[in-house]
Length: 410
Image (cartoon, rainbow, N blue to C red; front, side, top):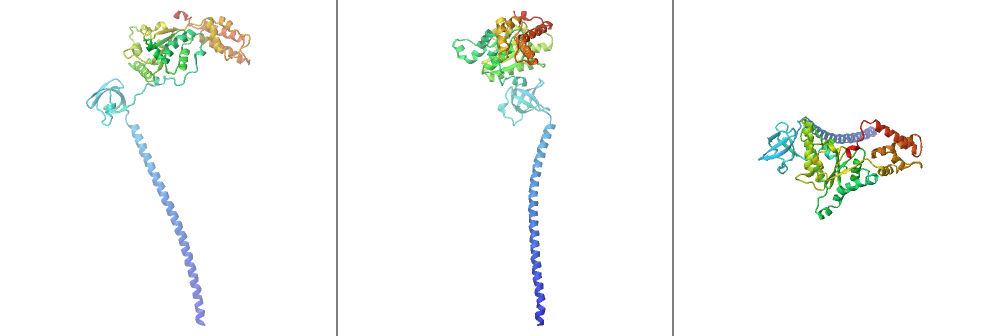
């Protein structure tokens, strides 16, 4: 009896111990799971940080290279003139000529006379061969989008339009006909006339109507400060036109570089004359241009050099005088075709009152009259608006210090 009584407490103690051990194992399992998850998360973070560190190291190396390149001295641009064994004779950008070494890793087939190269600033050795590049003024001369001007928008110049289309458009559109007749097509057309008579407008219409590449530049842009720069730009302009042939070159205000050559003592005048001589050589030299037509405009034809005006360069000189009565009627009809007019407006009457007006002044007349009508909140332009505009323009012409220039073109 006594033995049974003594055994029951021991049995209870063993049960409690078993429960405690089970709880301990469960706690350990939970802690182990937590530690495993933490270790896995730390391993993931480690891999992420290692990748981030590798990325930052690459970026730091790249920035170090860029910083090193920025700190390195700039290269000198030059051109190769000749090869002498493994060396080269180069002309630097300041005009001096040197015999220099050549980077052995450069493709030797690219090292030809005239190639554009980069030279080390210290010893002027050839580091790399650069691609040929056009002068920014030359490359920007190409008209990508055609002007919104057609021959139907030009009034009073029917004969001049016929002449310029025969000389410029016909050789481009039908070159076989000139070969059949055994003749050379005209190379250039000179547009001469007072300001405002439509010279630039004609060139814009040609650019719109033809499918040829159109290059437009102002003559004053070809007059450069340094020796040879103007001639180089002229040469690049014609080279670009030849590569994009058939093409048309339009030189506005050609009198800025094409004036008569005189015995001048100033270096600026001599440089302008060099540019003119390069233009003469490109238009009609030993290497005659093909499929390249030239249109030039000036309001001072009496200043042009005789060599420009001879046949073979500007084969046609198209004079654009101040419009006569019928021409003024045609111009006014063009400029008023989209303008609401009152019934009392007579185009013939306006034509009689605008004797001596240029095409640009007739356009200004319509604009001034329309502004008067708009300022008075009217829906159409009446006769009084045009009368006021004529009085305003006449007063402006009389107050102008420039006298009548029509005599220069008679």
